[in-house]
Amino acid sequence: MRCCVLALAIGLMCSICRGGVTDPQRGSVIFIHPDGASSSSWAAARCLLVGPDGDLHWDRLPHIAVYRGHMADSLTATSKGGATTHAYGVKVGSEAFGRSDGGEQGEALVDGHGNSLSVAHQALRAGIPVGLVQSGVASEPGTACFVTSVEYRREHDEICAQLVHSGVTVILGGGERFFLPEGVSGVHGVGTRKDRRNLVREARDLGYAVVYNRDELLSLPADTNRVLGLFAWGHTFNDRPEEVLAEADLPLYEPEAPSVAEMTKVAIRMLAAQGERFFLVVEEEGSDNFANRNNASGALEAMRRADQAIGVARWYVQFRPDTLVLTAADSDAGGMRLRGLPVTPGDEVPSVLSHTAPNGAPMDGVEGTGGRPFSSAPDRSGRVFAFGIVWATSDDVSGGVLRAEGANAHLVRGTMDNTELAQLMRLTLFGQAAPGTELVSE
Image 1: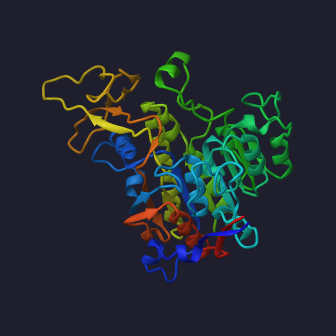
Image 2 (image 1 turned 135 degrees about the horizontal axis):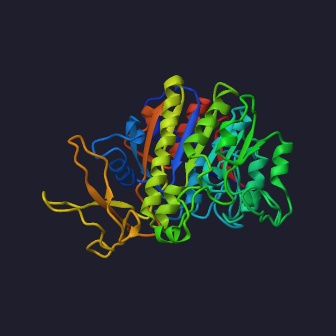
Image 3 (image 1 turned 120 degrees about the vertical axis):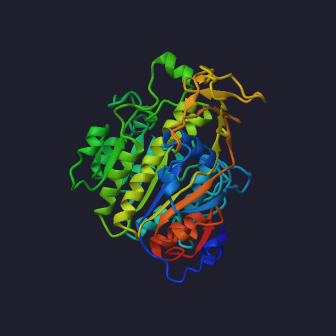
């Protein structure tokens, strides 16, 4: 059964057309998704990294809009549903993964000819190279939803098989376990696939160079056409509470894995060498996972890494101003909030924080609950401030912000619905809504 879900031409009559676009600038698109990062997350990162008067790369993106992120069935987004909305530009259910909804009731989102209408699939059909950069496992929805479609998020084996055969140029992330048959040893651990397929071998047969650490990634020959990076058995980070990591003597991030900024730089270089335009989707997943575990040190480190990736993208725009850099998160992970600790002159900063804020909300310091306060970078007067991180929840709540720079970035203003990100990406890549006009489900 086929039913009209959304006419893309009509959809463009929203904020994008209110901007008066008669001749949109065509160019590349770099979409950076620091998962779970709200304006409050960025405020905490700013104080820690550059001080309350400083500017992150995120702060320097000149165009900003409030993000409206409700789903078809909920006022708050899920990672899979939010990513599907970003990829297709249509409201979907919370359990959707590259489909209209989760489970057997979900339908493919296609045009009148049965072609997938994710922005990435449209780009591939138009001959525009596509890259996916991920600090979590490669099957994370923030990137995978752009080129894969499954009934349930936990179908990691199927998602990774679809990734390898999707036709994208760059696949960088973790999750080696889902690329190797059960019991087969890899570089980072033993495979867990139940279907006995060896996706590493299949990827090499398709022309992918396969790399496993930072040095191998940064040493790729300039003429490499495709790359699959598998930088950890699971995520490239250890998303557990601070106390658990300390007891197990585990780092926040795997030291041999490239950062999301390093992956982004290599991806841009490879994609830019293959044509005038490219489409790159980048996700720092640690900002979501650490925050959902209420690990403040991990979440702040993830924010630092996400900001470095934004800095790489902004650097590229200086050379190619026809590139759109767009960044947004579909939710606020954990309701992360900075709580300043006023200190009267002459008083000492407390050596440890109380376990909770006055209303009972959990409060983290450097080592976790009851740890040392964080110290900000100096303000313009040289003052350093102490603060803790207060958590509202371990779930995702609302609070997204969009920022942009480059081609058509002036259209990011006021408030924007989550469906409008795909419309803006299409406008930049194709100069129109899309090569097709009507989105239907079947």
